[in-house]
Length: 335
Ligand SMILES: NC(=O)c1ccc[n+]([C@@H]2O[C@H](COP(=O)([O-])OP(=O)(O)OC[C@H]3O[C@@H](n4cnc5c(N)ncnc54)[C@H](OP(=O)(O)O)[C@@H]3O)[C@@H](O)[C@H]2O)c1
Image (cartoon, rainbow, N blue to C red):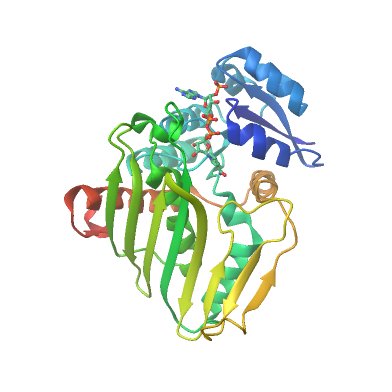
C-alpha cells in the first residue's frame, strides 16, 4: 500500500520542489492538497496530478485517508498546525524552522509522545549524500583535526509581503537561512555549541534581520557564518582541518539536475592539488520524503528528529538573545 501524503497550503516550495520530487514513487504519493482558497488547491492539483483537494487545512487534517502531512506554511504557523496534525494522529514533516521557540518544540515533543506519531523537521540538506560524505570525512579525521568552519548563505529579496520580510511571521535571515549552517555544523561536527555571539542588522521597514553574522564555539572548533536576505545570492561552507580544507560548493540548494561536488584542498596556495569528489545527480527533496516515509513504515527514527530540532532552535534563540544583549550567550543559560 502506498502511503498518502497531504500538503498544507499551496506554498511555492511545495509546488515547485517538494511535490514534483515526490512523483512516480512506488511507496508513497501526494494524495491531497489544501488551500485557504479551494481554487488555488484545484489549480495546483490539476497541474501536479494530485487526486484530492480541500478548501481548508482542517479538512485535510481530518481526512482518514491522509497518513503523513507536509507542512510548508509560513514559519509562525509551523508549530500550531503541526500540533493540530499530531492531535489528529497524523505523522508530520514540517518545514524549517519547525518552531520559533524551544517552548513550542517541547510542546510538539510531548504531543508526539502522547499520540505515538513520527514528526520531523524538513532539513532536506541532511538527506543529501554530499553531507553524509562530509560528515564521514570530518569525523574520521581525514582532514586532520577540524578547528574552524566558515560559511555564507545569502539571497536578495526585498518584496513587501513575502513571508521572509514579515517579522511577525518569523521572517528574516536567521530564521529563514541561518538555521542551515547551524544544523549542518551540529550534524557534521557531531557536537553542540557551548556559546554563541550574533550581530544583526535590521531592515528598518520590515523589522527583520537582513544581515546576521554569528560565531559559535563548539567543544572542538570555532564556527563563523553570515546570512543575508539582501546580498548577492551566494552559498558556501568550508571546513578547515589541520592538514586540509574541505569546501561544499552548493551546500544548501543542491540542484536536482547537476552533480554536486565537494573540493578538498591540500594546502597549496594556487590550489593545483585540489581533489574533487562528485556525487551522482539526485534530488534531496525526494531523498527526504523517501526517508521520512520509510521511518513511518518501519517505525524507525526520522532523519531530523524533534530532539534535534530542539537543539537547533535553542542555538537560534541564543543567537537572537546575543544580538539583543550585545554579549556572548552560553547555551547552558537557556532553560
Ligand atoms: N526546504 C527548503 O528548501 C525551503 C525552501 C523555501 C521555503 N522553505 C520553507 O517553506 C515554508 C514556505 O515557504 P514558501 O516560500 O513556499 O512560502 P509561500 O510561497 O509564501 O507559501 C506559504 C503558504 O502558506 C499558506 N499561508 C497560510 N497562512 C498564510 C499567511 N497568513 N500568509 C501567507 N501565506 C499563508 C499559503 O497557502 P494557501 O494560500 O494555499 O493556503 C501560502 O501559499 C517556509 O517555512 C520556508 O521556511 C523551505
